[in-house]
Every structure is written in structure tokens, then in C-alpha cells.
Image (cartoon, rainbow, N blue to C red):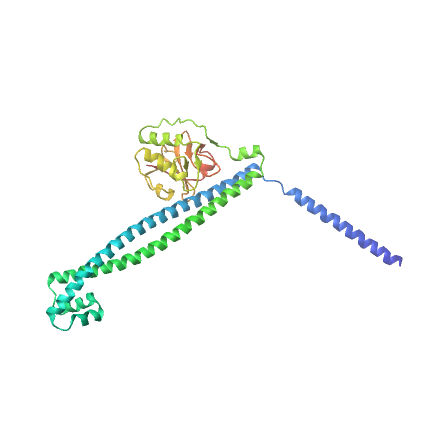
Length: 332
């Protein structure tokens, strides 16, 4: 009896020791998982900003393709209607020619031939038998060409409409994903103190002064971007008080009389390539592999850009992060 009691006590002692040890392990593990530092959060946010920039330009490209497809579809539908009207106007002439051909040919009643396949088909039979004049033959050729054109336009319009729908869906998906990247950035910042948040978002200013000394067309473009400092960012926005990265520089150079494409994918080819060390105020400076982001170089190792919804249009230093993600620069 005493032996069994001793064994039970020993087991209870072991269980208690095990429980305490497990608890200590859990506590030590919890203590080891420290809150992320401001630098770690900054790195995560910079990665999210890069991903957001890629999705933003994907949205812009898809939206541009959608708009182009819609415009083409409207032109096709207009052309299609004009062709349909021509065919309807020509049908009366075709019927008249058919009746005349049948009468002159004397190879059967017009009613019989018309019912056999329609005026156009019967006219082709008459043409094959040599019962049509040269002018009548040309009328038939014109009619058939319009019918073929209508068929082609109908097929192309259908394909274009489908492409427009696909591009709109692609744009909407990219926009949704981009917005989620911003939400993740906000969540990361919410876990920081105000002081830490300021440290993470440091490097930009909304109270910058234009010291570029740029002149000519470049000076006009630089003046424009400085005038927009403090404006808001929105994906796909085109001004006049809300921008995204590529619309801002497009509008700036438009003020100088220079037409630029809408997306970074096209803007990067819209001018003369320049190296990092050769940049001058007014040059477009691109980032990430797409390239997915663009700003305007304003001299003194700085640029003005519209980056994401968390930040207004601002002047930033190009040291560190931006230089490490530099793609190329272009002089419009």
C-alpha cells in the first residue's frame, strides 16, 4: 500500500514538473518574439510599395487597352451600320437588275429564279450566263463586297467587345490587389508608435521649394510638378488635383508642349536614355523591373513624384532606397 502511494506521488510530482517546464518554455518563446523594429517595418512597406506600383501600372495598361478596345468597337459599330445601310440601299437595285436580267435572258420566270436563292444569287447565275452588262456586273460585285465587309465587321466587333470585357476585368482585379497592398501597409503602421511611423515614412517633404534652375521646356515641366506638391494620389487618376505617378509626369510635359504616353511601360521609351549621373531637371526617372514607377528628376539628387494613396505628391531624396531600385532615366 505504501509503495503504491509513493509511486502515485512520484508520478504527480513528474506531471507538475512537466507542466511548469512547458509553461516556462511557452513564456520564453513568447518573450523571444519581439515586436518588429521601425527598420523591419520600413523594409516590409517598401516591398509592398513596389508590389503596389507594379499593380498600379498593370491597372493603367489594362484600363488603357480597355478604353482603346471600346473606342475601336464604337468605330466598328458605326462602320457596320453604314455598311448595313449601303446594303439595304443596294438591295432594291439588285432586285431591279435581277428582274431585268431574267426578262432579257428568257430562261425562266423571274418569280421562279428569285425564289430559288434570292436576287443576288440569281444575279450571279445571270452574270455567269452572260446576261448582265458591265455596269450591272459591277453593281453585283459592289453589293457582294459590302456583304463580305459586313460579315468581317460583325466578327471583328464581336472579338473587340470580348477583348474590352477581358481588359476591364483585368484592370479591376489589378486595382483590387493594389488596394490590398495599401491596406497591409496601413496595418503595419498601425502597430507602431507615432514616432516610429514618422521614422518609417521619413524622406519626403510636401513643402519643397523649386531650386532646379531648369529652363525651357524642362523648366515648364518642373514648375508644374512643384505646383502639384501636396495633391492627392489615386490609382488611375489624371488630375487636376489627384494623380498617379505616370499621369503626373505626362501632364507636366504636356504643359511644355510635349506629348507623352500614359503608362510607365511606354513612357520609358519616349525620349533619349540618360544615365543616373547624367540626369538633368525634367528627366523622367523610372524604378523597379517593369518599370512600374516614375518620377521627375528635379536636380540636387531629388525627384517629385506621386507614389501611393498614403502619401501626397512630394519631393523626395534619391539616396538609398530609390537609387537601389533605379531602372532607367529618359529625357523627353
